[in-house]
Length: 176
Image (cartoon, rainbow, N blue to C red; front, side):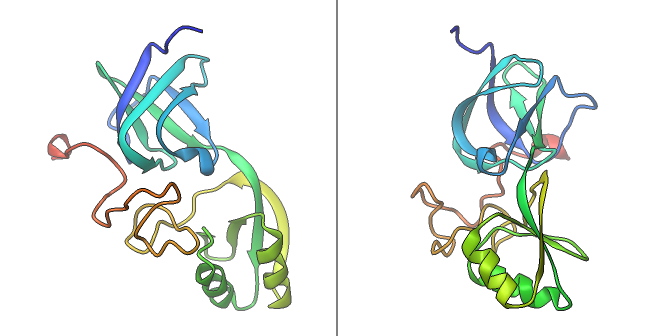
């Protein structure tokens, strides 16, 4: 197989172009990367080669060498919908286990996990299996990922996590 013609070395959390060149559809786990070949919706291959491991957000963009953007889309994936009379209490218990959680006004979404499921059932939550895009809250400093027993010092690949990192790897002079 030939080398990808598209190369992205930078990521930004919001698009600059009205119409990106293409898009990649990735689940939550696949949106955490540094260097990987991805297949765009068009079938074109894209080499992502970022300077550090980055959490790509839904609707963020990979900036192509030579100009242009590739939109990042959160793929539907198997999740557990959590509802309860005391939803903040459920959110606290989920967060206390460092489990990524998408927080909405009337429900929480988490990745399916039988241990967390049993805990939530014991606490009186109503649970339903769904397939939806997963866009959980960032880490304690507003960006990045939450991982069990990490406490913000390393990511799950063992690399140092800089709390000042804003999830993208280029300057903002063009954002003025």
